[in-house]
Length: 89
Image (cartoon, rainbow, N blue to C red; front, top):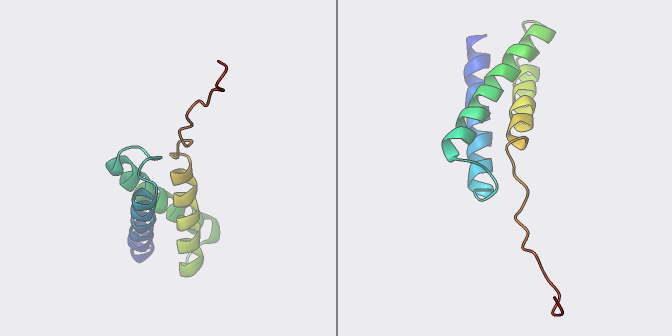
């Protein structure tokens, strides 16, 4: 169980780092993104481990990454759109 939690925390952190590196203008502060990804990975591992039971290491990590990705997707803001006005306005 300890290896599952540590592995899922590292995977969640790596996913958050990649998202913060790829979309810096659409996400909040980098610290918030990194903490959300890490805690999302740990929470996902605990939920998946509780649902499947022991002995499903790979499935637990996949569930952890899925929950971390969902939580990170909730942080993404829409792209800023500039108002385009016609020449007659």
